[in-house]
Length: 219
Image (cartoon, rainbow, N blue to C red):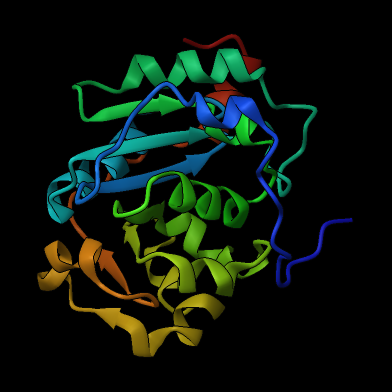
């Protein structure tokens, strides 16, 4: 069974693949990290990534396609290669990077990936990106309070869940650290814990609905 709680620091040394991530970042860059299983990726995901890129003034958004989300069933999760290809079909532009960095690092939890990327790219201003649906269950993530202490976080509104997410355990716990949305462009350079909730036009696509349509043979 999977439990939320603090995460111990994991050594990343001795993993040669961790040094070959397929992308390079320079000190001073403003980079969003958007993680998930993306099973499958859809326009709703792309909407979250693009909204964060535009509102925060990010140089890059790295889609971190997870090998297996510990909060989701492995029975209905497509292969990593299939899910990465699905992400490539919905992204556009040089600013969007699709990565299997979590697999290369050998990390299972977001907190381990964040620490590894910060160590690999000192001086880069990272921001964690998530949809409001993820904020609603963020308190179930391993090391969630440590994630908030590692990097600023941008939450993008999603249909049906936005109001509930703003009263979630994580939102209440870090209410003091929430920045006004008008200050979104300052977020990448802010000292954590700091987070912002970005509202705007909603995209109603969801992975669960797409999986159901595929099971029923729909387009």
